Length: 173
Ligand code: ADP
Ligand code: MG
Image (cartoon, rainbow, N blue to C red):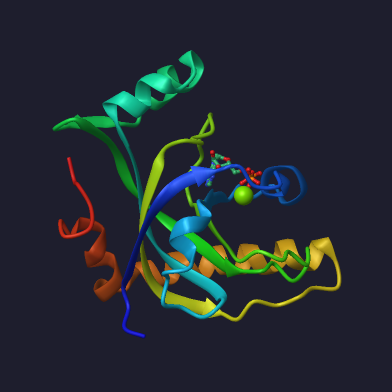
């Protein structure tokens, strides 16, 4: 495959393990877009931007709206967040033996609210490693923290850093 690969889809509910068991929330992407991703399973790094139409925004809860207003900027009839670094997992999560292939995106940024229902537009820039199973939850968490550090290192490299501002993929406001 040739990187980068652009993927866009809505954030849906998963099993809720990311935050509670791992302390690392992952935005799970709707199943429909996953089939068309031309990538093998594994852990990847890249950039993501949240977006929503103004109509979809109005469907969110009052609390979500209040918080998201502080990060989303209006542009035409849509709203966009800044572009964030992200680590992504594509696959079956061997540790949990899932049967459905999932794309889960962890944004390297702290949010005080969830963003189910928003769209997440992502540019996958490269692969970090294969999916792996781990002997313990602790070992899994350690591996994810390594992936996050590797993501920061890779995204500092000019080739990958420049995609953050690339208006073919993102709206920079
Ligand atoms: P789920 O199993 O439903 O995906 P998680 O425990 O993995 O639940 O939490 C993911 C949700 O948390 C995301 O859908 C998003 O709404 C929210 N969230 C908050 N902060 C982040 C972040 N930094 N990266 C990804 N998702 C986040
Ligand atoms: Mg998740």
